Length: 130
View 1 (tube, one colour):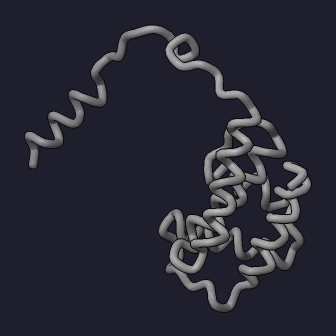
View 2 (view 1 turned 120 degrees about the horizontal axis):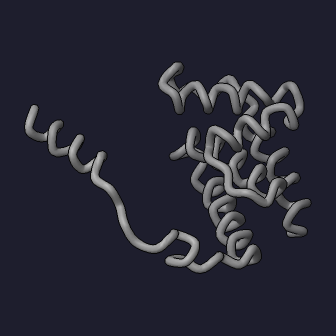
């Protein structure tokens, strides 16, 4: 176990070399990025019952990314979306973050998740003119 930890430490501290990332990878056209985000949003809606935490946080991330036109993480997307949600839906997002960080167990049955998803879908649809 100690050898594995030491090897991991060595890999983590190893320097990386090469061209700047901007020159190694082309910029993704915004319309392609929007397409990928809306595809992920639709997947979240279709698979919510199986992956509720992923769905709750991802739709917030997608909404925030579309609105700000800057990539967001689940945490930063949730932070951005939280004050923009109706007060009665904020606890859905709050619970999603608590589950994500390990502060709570997944329990969605007493939360207005369908209303949350619908509200975020309305925002995403308005931004993407779907």
